[in-house]
Amino acid sequence: MAMVEVGYRFNTFYFALQDKNYDLAQYQFDKIKKAIQNGIIRRPARKTNSERMFLKSPYKKMALALKSKNIQQIEKEYANTKNLCNRCHKAERVPFIKVIDPQYRWQVIK
Ligand code: HEC
Image 1 (cartoon, helix red, strand yellow):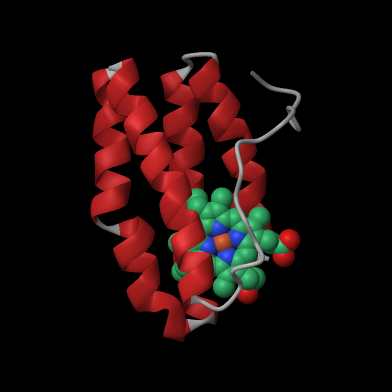
Image 2: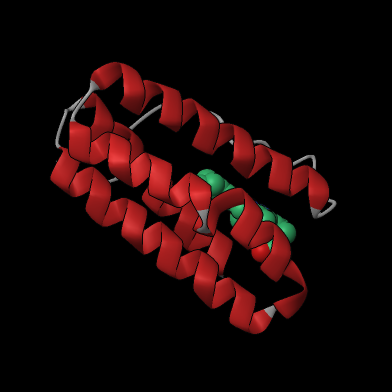
């Protein structure tokens, strides 16, 4: 279920960026990190790709961008994050699971 949580939180994360609520975005991004870390506990074979495509440098860059509140930097890191979600899906042999920009809000918070 780790990835279901990641998808759910990615939705709130995306709209928090749209709303420029960067504290909420950071909160959701940390929950995404935690869900991916929990995923490794269940599937240790995914550790390398999880670290390379999310937990290490990509996570740090997005967190720094959010801290800076620089919209261009945030947009760049968002695009990079989404791209890496999809690269990992290809690497983990689920290329048919394609992450897109969320189309509508799932949450009752903003
Ligand atoms: C470690 C590589 C990896 C990374 C990084 C990754 N995913 Fe996944 N994702 C998977 C795998 C593998 C699956 C197939 C389902 C499973 O085994 O959990 C999956 C499945 C999914 C699903 C479908 C869940 C379902 O069963 O309905 C969603 C949604 C998802 N990922 C979203 C994301 C998003 C958003 C990101 C980026 C923030 C991301 N993933 C990053 C490996 C990854």
